[in-house]
Image (cartoon, rainbow, N blue to C red; front, top):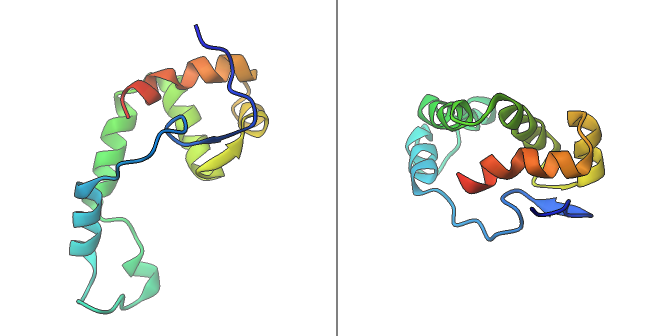
Length: 106
């Protein structure tokens, strides 16, 4: 078993993110016109296909893990484990274990 990882963490357990070609493709396809974003509010909205992809991935996680991942997504890519632990309501060691299913399916 691994212990809590102290300090700041990157989403994905500090691993380099390889990105998502599907996400990039969907976002580019969603832009209203080449070379311009048009209305910044609607241009930066996530396409329904991306929302469905994220929702599907969250739905496959255990409910407590999905809830913790949702909180982490709002807090930001790098966050202090103590802050995330407080927001989720789990001690750091439990939070670390709670996030394991999300790490293994990333």
